[in-house]
Image (cartoon, rainbow, N blue to C red):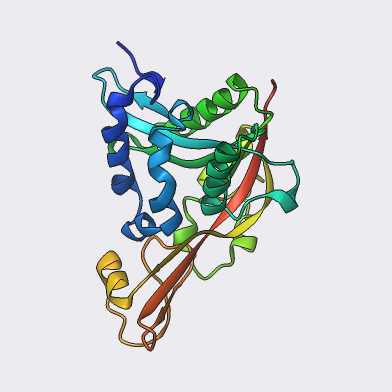
Length: 248
């Protein structure tokens, strides 16, 4: 038995394994986004057929990707804010009975033990196939660049356009999308917004914040703003909207 791609509609028994991938690959603070907490569970029920899972020969989940169908008119001006915005729109579209036009990525996850095998491209191709199978003319993705956390003081607007000497995108994840024919649309400066008390941020990051200010936090793509007077911390995760044309 070789590796196999299935949906959570076909294999709902894999849901808990998929849930476990997030904490294994994402920093703790990203797991405290209010919009995701409110709606993410619907991906495993209402939108189960849009969640594709890659299993190894033993049936263990080694990669997964989350997507949601939405109504998008194809213009930059109609793009949602990012992960938060597209998740809210997808849920609202279903509630209002609107027919989706586009599939949007939300997350692509590869188990740490299986990384550097090219599985991210496999998962991305599976997203494209899902869009085509459902008659959706485009796949859009609020891409979280892999190496941006190493350059947290560089604005995403500049980082997204960095290239290697061979002319290809500098960032590996942006490069995977580019090689599959995606076009860069625009930066999503507030793709996810995470807020919490200063104490919560200390627990999430393992850091101590002795005064108010902007802090470089491991795995954050830009600084986290801590306000001790109001006992609050705020982080806006910037992503990059990319579009894949789908032949339907």
